[in-house]
Image (cartoon, rainbow, N blue to C red):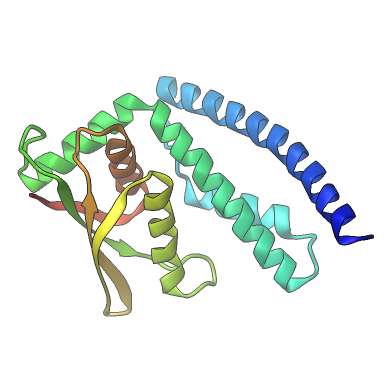
Length: 193
């Protein structure tokens, strides 16, 4: 095949993937609506790990397997972000709980939020990959990181970030909810600005 023919094939595959992605997100919406009624969690780490392992088990090439696992992990993360956006009650509860624990009021003037959390290891990957996963979640929610400090303490990686935005913004509320549900020891430390 020529380079042009290969590119045409990629375009055709991308069109098929787009249709499948839209179907998948419709299923994610239905899952979120069900969880809104039942109170179920969006993030169930064990289920996602088992699902990813099952779907990659038949790929023999190690590099392709890792790339497909990363593709699935990212797609699942996008799906969770979408679900958190639908679950407004869950968002409100998570944000209210975080603010109460920090002794902060939603009405307080601020342009940035200082947060902290721990990063557990992800599968057999190094701990830094967990931090990368949380940074990806932040980027998917269209939030800028103004400052970041990460360090390893007693074999555990911790991170402190200054996120640009206000707790009243839709993207920030969704992000705070997602991190509260998915990151270990997630806390709002302070408002700034």
